[in-house]
Image (cartoon, helix red, strand yellow):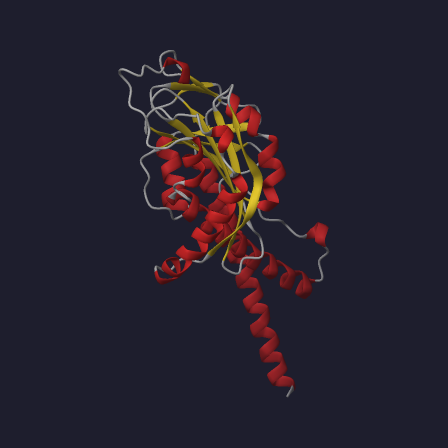
Length: 295
């Protein structure tokens, strides 16, 4: 019996040491990924050619190709050529468990009329979209994705008529996830389309995201001739979407869906590592302040 207990103990200790080595390897790999990225600050020209970006204080910018690399290769999204870049908080890396970002793209859908902005009943729209999510879930499950429940507005839809900016945010629950997802949407209307700014985060980061909305919005400036007021009705195309349609249509972009799913996967992944760290402390008798942390 004693021999059996000794074998079990030795096997368990071997497992723990192996796990600790794997954690060190993962930490090293994540640091290498972060160090390989070339972040930018200051004033930049967006590749859409119609606006400039002044990187707001507290953020760093990843250009189009690096952002597509992060979204596709690191986060498992399908390629999306519409991405122009992303704003990443200086205090967080793209592979941090509590990391979040603002993605930036431009949709050249045409001039979006805002005549209906004051007539939209967002309570009715919420109910309609909740039903739409529920109706789409069987298809999502068949395609191998988690079902989504639209819990409610995380931030009520609001259209700033003076600045021509539309805000809204959804609280979503993916499958059995215990941490709900934040889908924060911003649309900056212009002459020939809209800038699409989406926060990829969880509800845990809601306050951080919301507190940075104004300075992120202020960071993008249309060039002369591309602003909403430069619209020429006899020349320019009018979008099929109105302000109400922007909230109601295109329930979630591909990037939003897949990056959010990966966000949940990352949290589970780091949770497993944290659990392993607890086992390690149990075996070695180390206290919390003696234990290295991830990220």
